[in-house]
Image 1 (cartoon, one colour):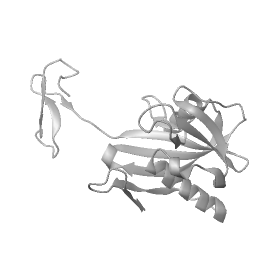
Image 2: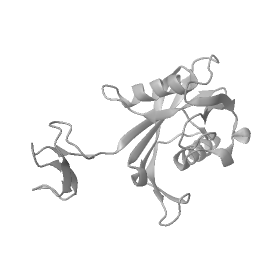
Image 3: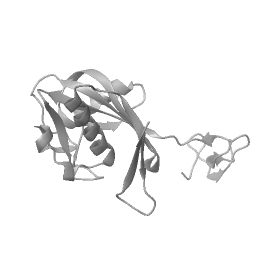
Image 4: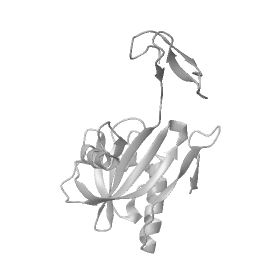
Length: 189
């Protein structure tokens, strides 16, 4: 951040009085510009033992597979964001959402919230951010072509729970290992 969104003056980084973290602060109007994690909301759309996956048409991770999910917008609930993202990325309609996973990703300042959802019909197709969308059973999931560790972990838990017949709500952290771009440690609470 270079300029204050309130007055347009230059901002500087420093620890404001009464705070403990470095922030962008406007020396002209004294506005403190806080930067907070983004919430990513999405669904595991289910249909007769299969789940709907999307092949990404955008970076990061172009051409790899994911669940329909994206950044939450202002003025919507997490559930509304998950439903909207599923419609935008897969042209799919869902309902009966139940919270399934919540993962903290501090290395990218994100919190992922994924719901299990009932796919309402088979009228789906790629949205602007997807190259393809399709239903997969457990054996055909493209595990080696998953876009993000959080999606891989969520689906791993999903199939474990489905195979036991009991779905729980899972929470945890996914942290990138130091010096390792694509290696992560998952801790469940």
